[in-house]
Each structure stands twice: as C-alpha cells, then as structure tokens.
Amino acid sequence: MAQNYLFYIENTLHDRSLAYNGVKLDGALTYLEVMAQNDLIKNEIGHDDDGISLLVKCALDQHLDFETIQCPAWRIIEAVSFGDEITCKKMSDDNKLMDYIKYLSNVDDSTLGPTANRIRWKVEDENKFISDKIKKELTPATLTNSYDGNNSNNHQISFNYNWDLPSSKTSDMFDLFISYHHSDKDICSQIYGRLTSSNFYRISFDREHVHEILPNAMAEAIEKSSIVLICFSSKYQQSYACRMAAEYADKRQRSIIPMNLDELYCPTGWLNNIVASKQCINVMKSNFNSSYANLIQQIDNIKKQINIK
Image 1 (cartoon, rainbow, N blue to C red):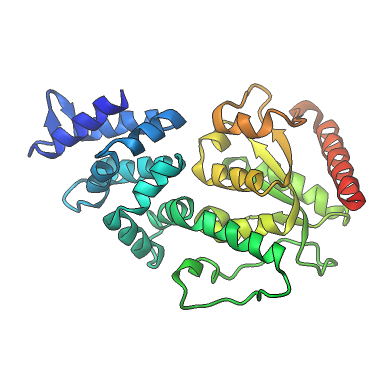
Image 2: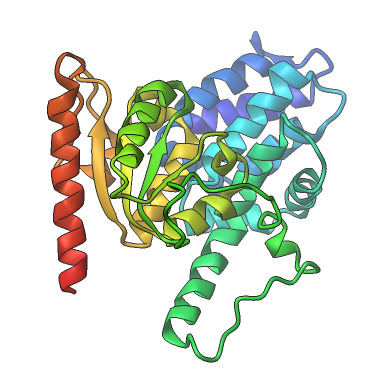
C-alpha cells in the first residue's frame, strides 16, 4: 500500500492538475501520513528508491500549497526519521533535505523549525550525542565540558531557560524527569506540584515544551535524571516529540516508571515496547491519592536501588 501511494504521489507531481487517475496529491499525502504511523510503513517508504526524494519535492516546492501539501509532507518525513538505520542513512544523504533542515534550524520559523530540529536529531545528532556522552563517561578526566559556538552540531544547546527545581536544591541533577504530552499538562502539573511541595525530590518538568523544540535540551535533562516518569495517553503515543524523549530514555537505560493517564487506553507499538515489561501505574481519577502513593513508592524503591549500587 505504501508503494501504491508513492506511485500516485510521483505521478500527481508530474501533472499540472496535481491529480492522477482521480487521486489528488493532497489526498495521497493524507492517507500516507496515517499509514506512516506504522513502523513497517516508515521503513517501506525509506527503503524505496524514490520515497524520500518524492516527499522532499512535496515539502520544498514553494509552488505547492503549504497547508495541504508541504506540511503533510514534512510530517511524513518526521515520521520516517524514526525508521531504521538504512532509512536514516538515506535521509542523511539527501543534501536538499538536510540543507533545508539546517536552514530551518537556524531561522525563527515557529511552524517548521521544531519539526526540522526533531528530524535533524533523529537522522544525525542523536547518535553523535550519545557517542559523546559515552566517551565522557569512559574518560572523564581527559574530556572537557566546553561549548564550541562554531560547531553547528551544538546549535540547539544555546537556548537559555531555567530548570523547574525547588529553591532549596542547588544540584543540577534530578531525581525525576517528567515526560508528557502538552494536552495532559493539567494532571502532570498536579503531579509535579505535589512532588516538589514535599521538598524530597528534584524534578525536571518542561513547562514551556522547550524539549519539543530543542532535542538537545531534552537529552541533557534526561542525562541529568535518575528516573524518567512517562505519563502516557493516546496523544502521547501519537506525538513524535514524546516518542523522541521516551526512546532516548530507553536507549540511555534510565529507570522508567510508566503512568497511564487514561484508564481505557492500552499502549501499542513503540510505546508498548518500552513500557510493557515495567510496572505501570494506572491513574484513577476517582482515587488520585492511591495512584500518587504508588508513584512515590516506585520512586523511593528505585532511589534505594541506585544508592545501593
């Protein structure tokens, strides 16, 4: 099916009416975007000889409608960036794509800039970032923690913002990083408020959703955190910004506590791969105190295990 839609996209691009055999370009992109939520489809698109280049044409052609063609194409490209190594290598080798992504990363484009940053992170920066962290862990005495402003790979680190920490805490390390979707901010703010009011825990909580825009900031916060609380819902699973954080925490082997914010929701796919083997806390709106007590118990148990090590 992915091959069929790529076929229609290619042929509609060659027609002045942007249609082929009754199928319009915007319609083909809409259906492909839905399909691209499946990881097998992501790789099918990425492995296709012309899959990436066709999407790049749709995303970069200024003559095409921005809302109905260019934006869906960018969203599909972001989805595909979560594909396998072959897919990411093909994206990295597409000079038109990567040059424009780097351009978007350095201009104030609130619409496409965050998407470009996340694509760049998945395709190029994440592996290098992790590799640098591992090198520092292995040889801490010989490496410095300096920032080179001329290095384009560090372009995201320069963003200035403050961590949410209790005022009595001076360490830059955190007990807990809270990963959540902005639609669930109210319940997650409640959790954050209760944790910080106890003055026992140091919490990294991204109020302004900086981590969705600047992946390096997200990764640095997770690096400084012992535990990652994944507050998930259906919106969380559908968000590539949320997936970016959850998968990074998993790759870096952080202790993960999954918290299901919707009693009726069952995680699937990539999210289920991360949380299935862990003790999940189901938030009961009718009995939030019980869910919160369960969270505290899990946090304290993990902290004890870390202290023993």
